[in-house]
Length: 478
Image (cartoon, rainbow, N blue to C red; front, side, top):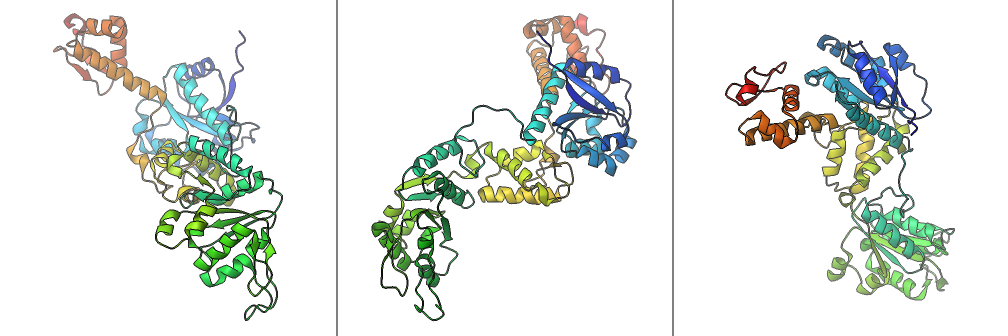
């Protein structure tokens, strides 16, 4: 079987480490081909990459004193912000507790590993970083594309169902009513219906019924003749007539005044309008798409909206799901906003930290998509690091109370917990615990050394504070 070509990798070492050979062997075993750089100048002068890639920030040789100096170097920060590279930090045991290094990793790196680690773990972490780099560059592979709504980002179940219903609604000429909270994208859905319909080449005319004074609504919708009132110096077309052959979108239709409701109902029934000051009816062919964030049936109950008009408008009803019901669409929308508004900032963040992604998924988004886009745009300007954090999005300070968990760390924590439980169930008899875990006694001793556990003379497992050591009598007492 042909071995796959190794992926190129930038390996930057601010200070060399004595264990470089072991890391290089692990990288090559994981199908990566490292290019070692030691000078920050060489790193800053890297040519633009033709394809997105991965780089290692090797901090194992950095001591506490140099860590403070390193984190303040402007040239290094600029190099780490290279949009074509996703950085993975390499630390030695204990370095995660150094504040300057921890801050640098959080601000500039996609992930980190603690070396020594096995090649499988290294491969998973680097592979994830490469996948995120390709995703940021729009080069991520995927399955077959599902139904989409033109102009909208999302692949959740709710959006797929909506896309199917939009396609069906576009195929007929019946009025469509869009129900959804503020900021969910009702106008985008209305536009998508228009473009996908046979009227797609004709005008799409929109009007926000809540933004126009009631006294002016009649003339805005239906127009007026010259001399109809003081100041009417010439004939003016209304929005309905302007949409002839196309689609009229009535946003916030619940705010339509009663007088205009009666005229709109007559247009829906007869297909004709009459301008203010006019004496002839004008035939108009326009499809009506209406929308509101309010409960329209409640407005009917309260006498603020005509029941007959309600039923005329609500022939086909489409519900647009709020952002909190759209799952991973939240992340897709945030990444889309990051790319779309990149030109607004001089130094574009490369992406979002893990804490930011968790915070966005946990937030209820009362302002829906509009709120998400505005938060991302503000964070792009205010973010201090290469990645936008939860604090930058004003969604809490998840950086401070949640530690980044890598695959390697999760595996080690799970392994240690399994060993401790097995020892406890077997009264700390190493042989019996090894049999339960399905490993040899020697292997269990080796794992206990790795995790800083030893068996004291009393048989109680303890954690070592520094270098793990095992009591000489541990084996005999077991």
